[in-house]
Image (cartoon, rainbow, N blue to C red; front, side):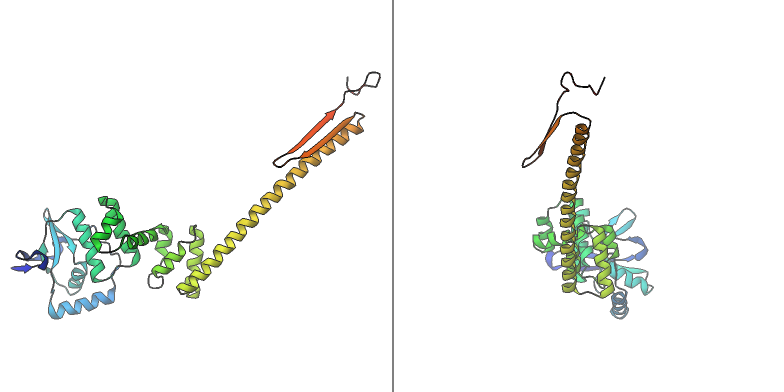
Length: 282
């Protein structure tokens, strides 16, 4: 089946829509969305059942099959209805254009969660050597918004896997970033789930943990300094005991201690036996 479709941004040009077999369409390798809401898919399926697929999916031809550029939700909903074909527009796009359209379409239609969005930006930057400014221009956001999203990926993969995005908001995740170790982040996350902490309560809890951590570090540092001074006193006492033992053996010995700013100077003088005196050593 062939019809014509006119996009406003390419006024005067028409694009052909073909009815493609869904089995001939492969998923978009640059799809940023990892989670598809089942309730929303059911709603979309009901709409398609009643009105059909109003807007065709977008694909590109690749060998003897097609790669999906935009429209995975429409395909999933159509499959749930048992449909075998779907209307599609075929475009000739590069990998970069394909990745950009997939990300932008998801941002504009049904918001990605904050991690999916951040990973989408990172992929554009890492795979296509784009700067944050270039990504910002392409998706219509500020450079600072892109940078803030990318910061969320500093959470370790272990922590990201534990995030229940039905509970954890982006602000919760930002608060976790203040904790530098994965262990502390995991403990904080457990506390959020256990007590149902909102963002403000989470920020207060993390501030308490940071203050406690700083106190522990300070105490450990002070204990380390005290231990060093204790060790020095032990060394000096050992020297004093040795000097006392030499005196008891009958030798004349002097020990002089001088405490300087950055060191302690110890001078020990052991006098040789005078002639006529009994020698202690042969």
